[in-house]
Every structure is written in C-alpha cells, then in structure tokens.
Image 1 (cartoon, rainbow, N blue to C red):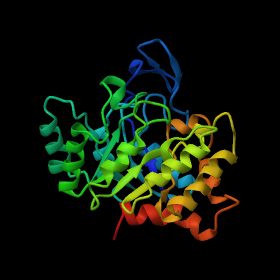
Image 2 (cartoon, rainbow, N blue to C red; image 1 turned 45 degrees about the vertical axis):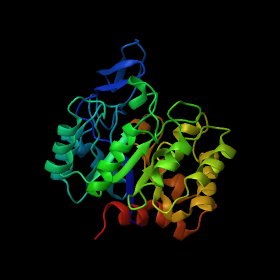
Image 3 (cartoon, rainbow, N blue to C red; image 1 turned 45 degrees about the horizontal axis):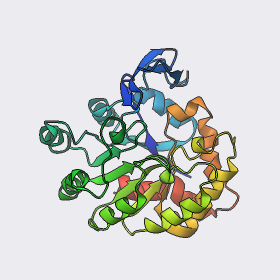
Length: 303
C-alpha cells in the first residue's frame, strides 16, 4: 500500500514564536522559549538544529512513505523559502504550503510573492493561542473580516486552505465560527488539522464538533492525534476510537493520515504513527487505504 504523509515539516532553523515568546534552538535537538522553558523538539535521527528535506526522506523511505505535504506555522517559525526549495529539489516527493501573518503591514506584498511569484498552491494557517496567530495577536474571529480576507484571497487563487484552530477550550477553538465561514466558500477545499486536536475525555465534544464541520469541501488530517492522547502509548486506543468516530461521522474519504514529524518523533516512532491506522482493528482495508494514501493523493497530488 502506498502511503502519503499529509502533515510534515521541514525546518531550516528553529525560529518559532508562541505565547512564551521567541523559540530558539539550544543544541541537541532542544529548543528554549523566552520564558526559559526548554524541551526536546527534534529527535536525533532528524537533526540537532534543523529538519532537512533529506532527513525526512530518509525516514519516509525507511517506512514506505511515498510523498509528504510540507506544512508550517509559528511553532518552528515560518519556513516559506526553505519549503519552496525542498519542493523544487524533490518535486516527486513533496508539495508545500506557504504561511503568512495577515497583520503584517505589507501582507499584500507577501501574498503576491508567495502565491503569485513562487506559486504555492496551499496556504496554511495556525491560529492557535499556543503557537499560532492568537499567541501574539488579540483573539481573531474565524468568521470575521481579518480571516475572510484570507479566505477570499485563497478562493480567488484556487488554493487549498489548511487551518489549525488549536485545542478544545482555547480561545482559537472556534468550531461554529469556522463552520459558518467555510459554508461561504463552497468551491474551496479546506483541511482542518489534528482532527480538531481532541484530548483525553473529549470524545462527545469531538463527535458534536465533527458534525458541525461535516461539509462536502472539508477534510481532516490526523496529525498529532496520538500525541494529544498522552499519557497513552501505542496503539493509542483513545486516538483509534476518535478515528473510528470520525469515519462514522464525516466518512473515511475525508480523513488524511499525517505524522506531524519531526517533533512527534521525539515521543514515538514513525512506524507506530503509521501502524495506529494501518493496524487499526475497527477499520476495513479500504478505509485504511483511503486514509493512508488515496484521499491525500486525490486532494494534493491529482494527476
């Protein structure tokens, strides 16, 4: 079975910005926030200070993963040029998304460069209050004018719109507002990251929320679903249950497997992140094939 990783990251250098200020590398794959909080961000097999495309390809090749979608956000710091260079160097392995801050004074010039000149076909927005748009700006209404400027720009250019709204309970986790906004762009394709990032005990909330976003132009990636189920370990029964609920509510043809590597490889192996779907006890072979490959191939790599 072919496999496509629908959520991965290349990193030229850790240069993130979040609710704890700037995030910078401090050696050995570790990073430190301006608050002094440090943690292991990169696994040794990826790199000490970066996550080069060649490092990702080595991991992918060792596990039979054919292609990957390179996303980005404030957690590592925007990596637009590095992502573009990775796609240009390995066009048969990667497609990339660009990201920008809509509050930038020259946002229009930035968008023109990224999407008109460099030719990105995907835009990624992390709006979370942890390491996204709302970590460094006042809360933004996902159905308000700031975001509609972003939606309209993407719709006008036929971009796929990927959005991470953070975790339940956070100010950025605006499911109803996002649903209302998406319904105003029926011709645009949206991908919601992390299956809405449910934590342990969020099962009923997840079912209700997926029902609000069960729209014909919405897909969900499963990246970091296992990490969000900590302290559970492989095979992550809660995360597997959330996937089965999602299949029942939105359909297997709307789900995209993703690893969120490199940071998720600090906690567990790439093999386990694949096998929690590939060996899922309650999914059919056809459903697994859709989630692991077919859906991403049709959405991101159409012939």
